[in-house]
Image 1 (cartoon, one colour):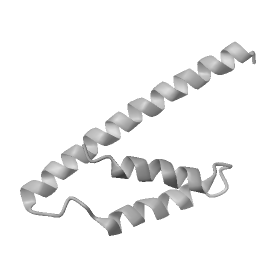
Image 2 (tube, rainbow, N blue to C red; image 1 turned 45 degrees about the horizontal axis):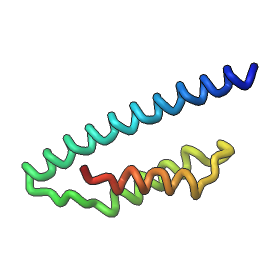
Image 3 (spheres, one colour; image 1 turned 60 degrees about the vertical axis):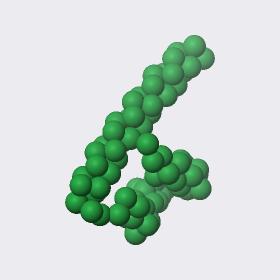
Image 4 (cartoon, rainbow, N blue to C red; image 1 turned 135 degrees about the horizontal axis):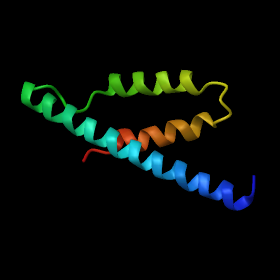
Length: 81
């Protein structure tokens, strides 16, 4: 594969990551609306820890740096828009 083709594929993956992050943000906003309507707390530290633990297991042995994966998802979890 040529460098130009690799870069094009990276660009495609970047766009997909962004699309998925936007979808996740929309779903989180819907969950917050449901929580607010039912009187539940918006912040659920136990749920956040469960998400991070599940992701750590999912990415174990993948070659991705676990600290980087956790940092990425902490950013997504902190996105309270």
